[in-house]
Image (cartoon, rainbow over the protein chains, first blue to last red):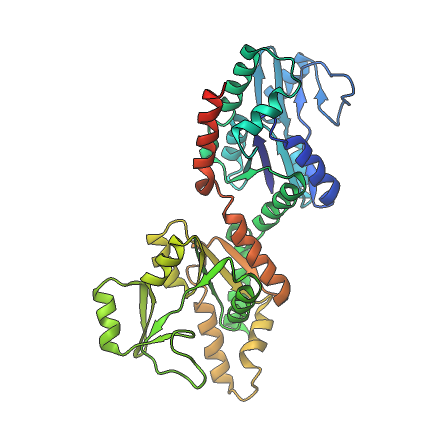
Length: 203
Length: 203
């Protein structure tokens, strides 16, 4: 199953996903995005991102080897298809952290994908997470808040909203939401059909 | 929220619901069905069923005071509307134990209702639960198995299938499935809209 996690910047998605992998890593595979932007200090190729040059990225687009991609300012970001499909075949739930527009493109290809949007408990809380460095001008803060609001455009098409008040509790909720998906009728119908066939033929 | 629980006879629905109410009763209200059949020894009016005579039942039908009803052989069974709507207004999740056809009528009126189908882990297991009294003829067993298979007709429209291997584990799964529904986007969109409004107006 594909699990897409999006959310406001500053909602704590990254921390949640790291904890989910630390605590329930045996159940999940974490998709690594590809990008053409330069690595930041400490970022590791193949772990934080696959760092590609533009020519290689465009080649992947043309070979249909990205589940989705987008261009921001001058850089490309995308989700390599091979890893995701490999892990799904191996029976893992694959976690993707991407923004809403990319998530909706993935839902188009995998209607069974589960979309989860993470939000802080209030706008005040989000504001304090976005500006806690304390050095920003009002203008910068204003822009950042508006950008955050834009990040929720399209959220109506999501399946779940996770209000992240407490990291520990939210990690467990996230794990539960994903586990419960395995009980969805679409996942279990073959089981019911098999029981029914047996019921009609058992002696 | 309305939570409808159906399943094969012998799947253990009754036990599951009793345990759910015993362990998490503060979160839930259990709907009591109305019926025109006679009480069996030990059954309590208003707890196991509301026992009504036919005239009174038909009056409730005509006054639209039943969410759904059905007639089996010579008896009516139905779900009184008042209690369910009262408890939902009080913020409780209301649990209904009814068969699939009634469940689908309820889903028609409450599209947000969550439908859960309970099944034993195998047809063999279901067979042994249906015949463990050991006194039935093959003909009776055959009929019972076919009736069980009929009980799954329409299950494709359900939301979740709960494979009941272990009562304790299944009770917790049932509780989790219901709790997770409160994270559905349809339940939380007003929250996101409020945050977004604040993000655009906060100074």
